[in-house]
Image (cartoon, rainbow over all chains, first blue to last red; front, top):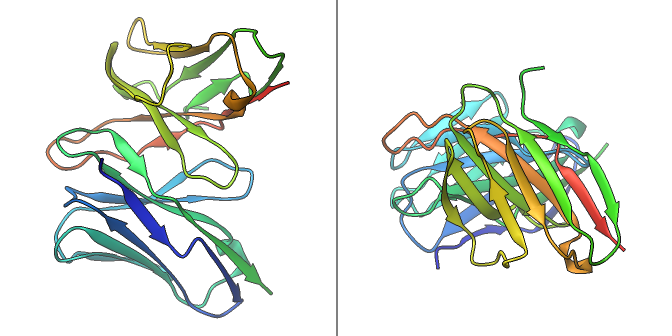
Length: 111
Length: 117
């Protein structure tokens, strides 16, 4: 069945370093969403990408949707301790609004 | 508070007992989702509703699990004859799809943590 995989599973960085997580799907996606979950918290929506090759920025966060709409990335420039958490991508199953979540990338930032 | 509300927040039960969780979505949202999350894993889809209609139920869900949304507002998730493997965080989310290929962002509740002894 349709799967969404993320790499890496964990990333430890020094504060100020950059961070990137990648999301890959086995099938073409109509859209992709990104969520952040702080330790002990619940997932919080960050952004949705819809168009092929789309790039969106939110301050230090840059989101990209691949040309083939089968992969996506989230890049954080100059990480801060407030960026700590697990970042999930999520995508709908084909022809449905059933959202499946990726495996997540846990980011740890050392001051 | 106009966000998604879940209760109870924590439930400890003995194996074999039944438990029920309630989710109150954001009032104008017609979609409601249930997910299960275990430590270190992503949310795992269980089921979702459009208004009162249950659109899909995960094949991972055994017959011990049932969800309802009788009036298209709040929803309940019941687990019968709980097993230790049911221990997890049960997350509810609601959304208002905007149509087309825009799925609509999910607004999650704080979750209901189940511990089965």
